[in-house]
Image 1 (cartoon, rainbow, N blue to C red):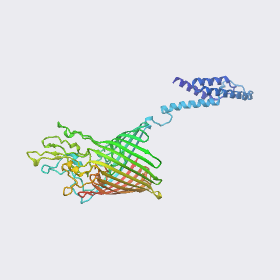
Image 2 (image 1 turned 180 degrees about the vertical axis):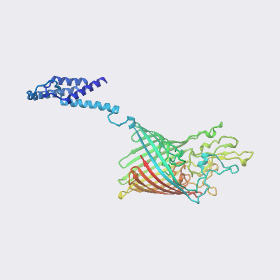
Image 3 (image 1 turned 90 degrees about the horizontal axis):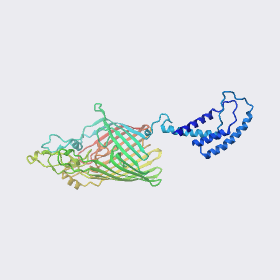
Image 4 (image 1 turned 135 degrees about the vertical axis):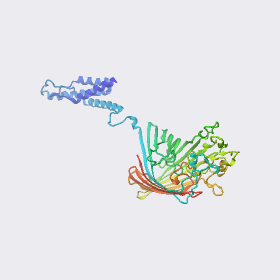
Length: 564
């Protein structure tokens, strides 16, 4: 450090010397020995290399000779007076070398200590970025007056239950869905704020918080009101990502949906808990491959229902395993096709009938209570989980407090296709199709698993009305498919058809039919860019039940969307 300081001091001194220049009336003859000594001193200080010094000495000798010749022409000039200062002549190349050396050292120190540029921040700040979005929505829900008013809300039954299904002992109705009373002009808010940190060149981490009325996994929309009460904030995402190669990324935690999919199966607001490996490989100018594999814990077994008992429930943890392979094909400059096939296996998500139990005798719960779904919307076939032994003293008056579980297994094939086309007059068209088939759907197995206790999706003869298929199509036309600036617009329309057990009802879009399965209908709307990153959306969704009692729902959504 001392040598650096000395070297810097010397360099600064020489620069000052070259700038000051002679102040005498006539320059004194240069001293060749002093210049050579200066060059040698710079070599000793490490400013110059010996090879450079040899060249400088030769040049100094030539310039000194030229200076002596020029000095003879001013020999008759006025003599120096007291107070005049004579400064040693330094060759131009030496001055340039000193200037560059000083500049390099000063700038290196400035960058290291972050004072080279005003109003800058420490290095860690440059590795962190923020983004977010805010959506204001006015939503109205319209129900047909001919809807059945006896549709049980099984999600609430599980959440608030158990519910006593014995009419001889139960004094209240089970939780029922609102099916006839409109809900108009619900003012709703979605606000999300994310932070991403670049930890190392190949490692990053992210956190995002968001609004939400509860821990519902498919929506971060918060209904406002409530006496102006404060609103909840939830951890929406929290993840760690490793870019192993240019083509392979590994990520884990609470992550955004890593699969190419639509809201027929997974809500746009749904995040996944678990780990995923994502790869992208470009084959040539026109073709590329992509894919994802992942493992996601859906729910871990809890001992809550048997916490006061000696016998605990078995560990039946629920997992989702997913694998997808897809390709992008640039057909030509105006047409692009993207397709993917995925397989999703939901392990142990279906319910299990319990062994004989006696809640009426003080048992804290039954041994399969935790096989009920952690979150449901509506539509899936469900059955009573508990095999309650009647009280022999009064069998007819034995209470039957029950939870319900999913009757079907869910092992899904998911096919997605998207075709983007650039049309004349700057129009763009996107055609999209999605088909889902549940390989785990088996009516015989469902009846066996439930021991004949299925409680919904039955016709008047007790026959199961369900199915394993779901599909949707959507078309979007406008001057932009991804709205980014003022004046961008598009119109969209589509149709959905979802049989009751085609997919788990807990994870898909919560707007169409207000979430879940056993629904069919159309949707249409449009988007318009009001400013950069600000756009308005209008959407109308009209749906009805595929099977069972009449249940028609229309939803109108008017939104202002922003992102930053």
